[in-house]
Length: 126
Image 1 (cartoon, one colour):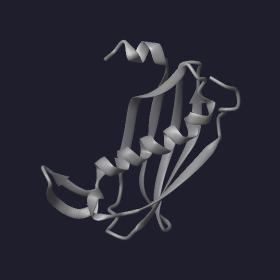
Image 2 (cartoon, helix red, strand yellow):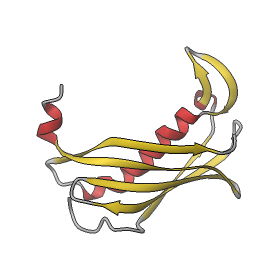
Image 3 (cartoon, helix red, strand yellow):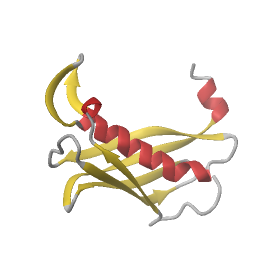
């Protein structure tokens, strides 16, 4: 991994809740609110965006662990700011702490751990 990925480094992602982010199973909407699945997707995405500039050509990041407390709902049209802060790095992993806010309200908090793996090792998996 390239140098510079240090504790405290942060990045934010702004998303607007749309109907494709609603809680649903088998295309049946359970309720028209920002789903936990969508939160996890965006948590992993912002964590990936922090990591990408520091990956060497032969490296790739792979999700290893996600922890999430979904505290409050967000309705369609809500603006969600998802912030990731690097908490811990090793040669083989990066842990980010996540906070998602809608306005002044924290709607979710958690963490994402990504493993740093050689691309050739990943290619052997498929």
